[in-house]
Length: 238
Length: 278
Image (tube, rainbow over all chains, first blue to last red; front, side):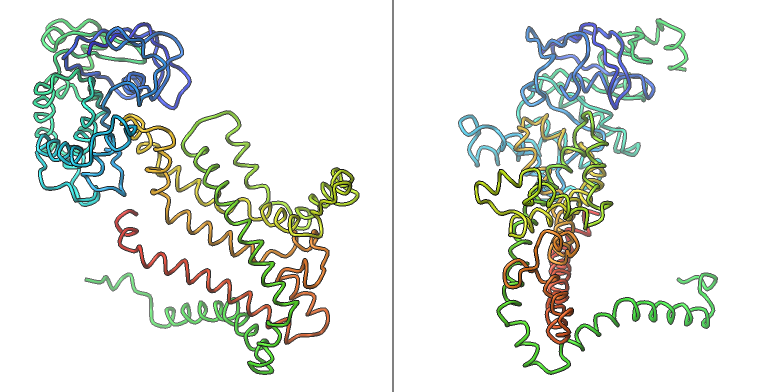
């Protein structure tokens, strides 16, 4: 699913402001939103998810205007920095949540849900851990469960808010590779927020560099490194 | 391994322990013991007779009934208010928080008087109610209103910090996974506040059964009809019927101890989950 952000602004919110941001992402692309804190990258991601509503501008998924659509109806998967797993549910129940809350007619049968959960546990390489509670899992394992949960309803778009931010270096590298693999395997359009340029350049097809609410440069890692568009980009990469 | 440098000298330790014990003894144990001793001064039979006397039984029934109505009301309101305040942003949020705390800062007598001014015979709605023969003041509805008002903040006050600390992450996750607001509330928010909610409800219940001031104003003190247990204790005491007064008082104390025991039992039953989550 392609994404188009058209002149989006947001000022009053708990998150940093955005000022007339436009961005186009092709179907199947892996894009990183890179920037220092308060650059607005998380705000942009939350607007894509529908967790924030912009004051100006439009957001398009394919040919559909989703600017004011509820998060529940956008067909997205969202991965949070601090996992946001449901503490009172097992890993399997967490993963099944998106399927369990579907309205009666379209909800898969219990056995189909169980099968899908097993399949997702395989995908994130944690088979057999479905009966654990989140507090019995390591950080990396939790984020894998959160990823599986976000993928349960076959989203067209995967949004990740600093998904590796809370993890240590080794787990980070492993999960980074797993992320890219899953993205390619499922043919998703993924948008990934990070403040770590190594991570962004190692993972993404294209990187958007944000600074105080605007995009400084949006290009492939090679292009950005070859020809930084501004003084800010040059300094940020240095 | 224990660090000796962190240990106090034995004398200081003993003095501190002694001071703490004396304080707890005078402030908590002695009053409790006094109530029980006075209540049982003339033996079990006298105690039993005093608490099973018709007026006392009516007071017990009324107290339990008032608590049974007001505690669920304030629980529902408290959860709803805490949920709105902790999980959403809206205009007037700080005003709402202040309003919720109002009953804590208003004298209970005033809390009672407010309802007399509104619903009493000379009150704003007194005439209208009188014509329709609806009794609020000096009757059960007045007692419930006053109790609800006084115990209004307990559940909400206790839940707001808890729910704010939990943040909105799990709710946001639920909505991105396709859950409706209703599903998010019941499947994510409510299971997450089990213990916090319980504690507030127990405090609310203890206060609802023990409230004196506000209830005293709206009750009318009709024995066997509108006297709750605290009011009955006062009435008996003013009659110089000390044994009966302390008997009812001991029962009220017992109810408080039962609530505390219930709370501890719930905490003990779920101790594994508590330890894992906090």
